[in-house]
Image 1 (cartoon, rainbow, N blue to C red):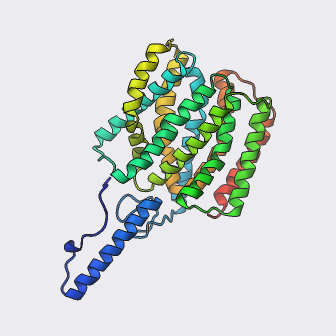
Image 2: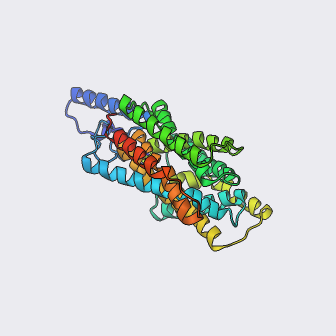
Image 3: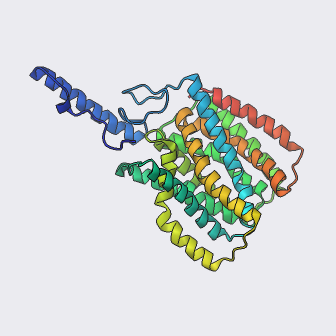
Amino acid sequence: MRVESSAIDGTGIAVSSDTDRASAAHAGTGRSTADARAVSDGTPAGPRHRPPGSTAGTGRRNPSPTDRRSGTLQAALGVTAFSLTFPATAWGLEGFGPWSLVAVRCVLAAVVAGGCLLALRVPVPARRHLTGLGVVAAGVVFGFPLLTTLALQTSTTAHAAVVVGLLPLTTALFSALRTGARPSRMFWLAACAGAAAVIAFTVQQSGGALTGADAYLFGALLICAAGYTEGGRLARVMPGWQVIGWALVLCLPLSVPGALVALSYEPVHLTAHSVTGLLWVAVGSQFLGLVVWYRGMASIGIPKASQLQLAQPLLTLVWSVLLLGERLTPAAPLTAAAVLVCIALTQRARG
């Protein structure tokens, strides 16, 4: 990936007259201005990395049906990986303290991501992208894992799933504010209906009781939506795996000493469950899941990709039954059907 400016240098264009030189310089200036504007709003600039199906020179994505299907599949794989996060975290808490689990998962994921970046000799991102990567790091690398892990100490996975039920709608709102996306009215109606169905189901499953963990959960909701939105924007100007890879590497100065301090204060009991849970949240949820997720977001757009997460709480409940032995209520199939209808409507909606 090239991180330098993509504006065409006028000295590299062969011209035969003063008029031609002036025209070429004017065209180069226009392209430089367009590239700068493209970077500011998250669209690709010039001949740098463009999503499949984008139109050269315009920065506007125009994915083909095949590209849309591929992007939807990748986003769905990311959602599947994320749906295992809460059960895997519950397993990890059997042997690790909350601070140790979060810090160690960040370190392990950063080692994997950093190894990939070094092996492929990926250049360091341009300085203008560091702020966005910092938002991704604060949101999805550190903030969301920490807050949800603290919440899961006193909350069930079913109750924590209410965060995921609200996350698609919140991400779409952040996207509209940050990137200027303007989905259609049908999109918003379907998104709100799906979010309402998921919230009603998860609250009913948890008995309708609100706990002290809710503050952690709603904080995680907001910070994760911001991280998803910024990551999806950056994935339009650099490959998605590099977005999460560099975000993880940026956290190393905090995660390494944090892990050492946490491990020295919190007892560790290594079991099959705790080790498996740690490895999954580090490699599966923290790195591989986010790689395909950001690729999908860059392909089909942040709002539409975010609505696929309406299925995440239901998948989490299935894994909770299979892995944690929790009981599933009869309302699950009805809620699943309603959510699938809402997802179909958001994917077909214009905008």
